[in-house]
Length: 260
Image 1 (tube, rainbow, N blue to C red):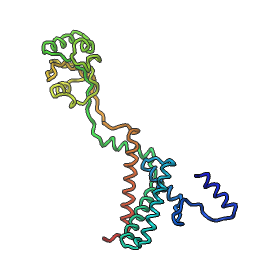
Image 2 (tube, helix red, strand yellow; image 1 turned 90 degrees about the vertical axis):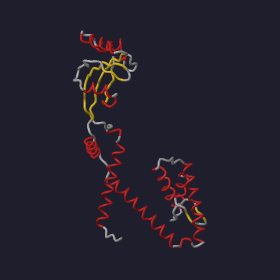
Image 3 (cartoon, rainbow, N blue to C red; image 1 turned 90 degrees about the horizontal axis):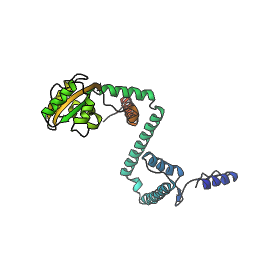
Image 4 (cartoon, rainbow, N blue to C red; image 1 turned 60 degrees about the vertical axis):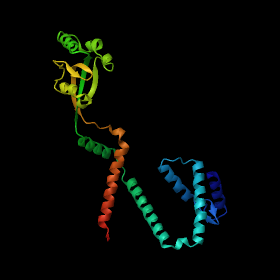
């Protein structure tokens, strides 16, 4: 298609012709390549494929639309007030969208803008307290007391967990439960864990619906649960740009003489 157009352009130029190269025609009315390109670009913006087959489909649709348009004009439908209003609305929306795109192009979101917005987001999220705990789960209070006695005599917590714990999820890792918020655990467990100091073990067994626990608190930290900047870059970019566009619209409306 492109080679044909280029060849035609060269022939026209050599012949001294000023005729513009256009796309298909319907009853002599040209459908320009610019119109086809405009639809294809819209498809691309919406994530649709813009391959040659898609372009042919667009061309087909515009030809159909032109056939129908010409028939509508024959019937005088273009003279109706409703059509004039609809056309005015479409023109207004098209120009408004073009202004927004022009504004976005002239005011790109920089890395510094993103960093500043990310820092504001992080500051707005409340900190949560997390606990890195271990536990040894056994069936009876007597077994739990024996575990505590063994720990007092110097037995390593992780070794005892591997030997005694009935929790299949943490047994192999020495009872390690990873970093969790207190609310993750059942109430008796979380209450006992929250009272421990770093490195401390519960002095008495803790009973829950799962059995009897001996809990050790390895560490405590506070953090804000916010994704990394790279993970939310597109959303932050859109958020910043949306704010700028809202301000642009508000400023323009404030300057305009609007009567309702």
